[in-house]
Image: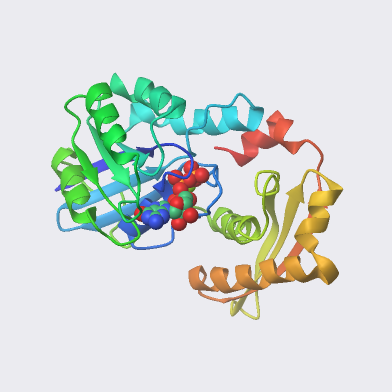
Amino acid sequence: MKSAVISVIGRPSAGKSTLLNALCGHKVSIVAEHPQTTRNVIRGILTEARGQLVLLDTPGFHASEKKLNLYLRAAAIQSLPEVDLVLYLVDSTRPPGEEERQIVERIAGLPVPLVVALAKLDLESRARESLRSFIKESLPGAPVCEISALTGEGMEALLSLLFERAPEGEALYDPEFYTDQPPEFRASEIIREQAITRVREEVPHALYVDIEDMEDRDEGRSLWIRAVIAVERESQKGILIGRGGSVIREIRIASQRELARIFPQQVALDLRVKVQPKWRKDDRLLKRLIF
Ligand SMILES: Nc1nc2c(ncn2[C@@H]2O[C@H](COP(=O)(O)OP(=O)(O)OP(=O)(O)O)[C@@H](O)[C@H]2O)c(=O)[nH]1
Ligand SMILES: [Mg+2]
């Protein structure tokens, strides 16, 4: 039996979380169009006849020196020396840039096997040829496959590459597990996903979600969650609440629907918005949020 912990690394929006969800067959990690959606290292577990792969979704590698970004980058990088395999996911719709060069610098010398996947094969792109040459030159000998997590194309070939390179070993998790995230964290991520997909520009980056309380009610038949969405400015709070509360109501209802897919009970969500100026510069908070 094969058993490997695999770090999935790549630029923001390369499709890492989408790939993880597709491989694990469950919604493990949240996905959004805007970059820097993932803020934590998130485990997705795939168990099949060949063995078990524990995939680590990581925050997108973004070359910016802002404090929040430094935390995100550190979270992505710190997993690298401890894994059995690195899967470098390259967005095939964007030509290689500074971020790709920096990622390659980090992974080229690692003492673990490397697999490269060119993502979003289903989309038209003029960048593919230059990306293929870039990968060949900068990571010579690394196996490369081309995939679409959306259509499933190339995914079997990718899995074969990963299992081939995985070491022999015992499974780390029982086969029914597909993630190890605590319930509060999963709930906060689902609410964050529903919020960020309904706002634009700076607002998705300026918010985080805190679960203040979570308890079983009606003798365990329902789950009550009190959560707060924090933003940096009054104007952002206004956007999230919307005219007559329309936006926050939509976020609440959509979140309840998504939460009910994960938790066995009915979910009642009490959702508020608060302003917490400059939270992205607060080390104590960032240490709590990004782990
Ligand atoms: N067409 C197409 N779109 C994809 C594919 N994979 C991901 N996407 C889209 O790309 C966007 C970003 O996907 P994510 O999975 O959130 O990307 P990520 O690498 O996890 O991004 P960060 O967490 O921000 O680093 C979303 O709009 C996805 O729907 C794919 O195979 N084909
Ligand atoms: Mg992600």
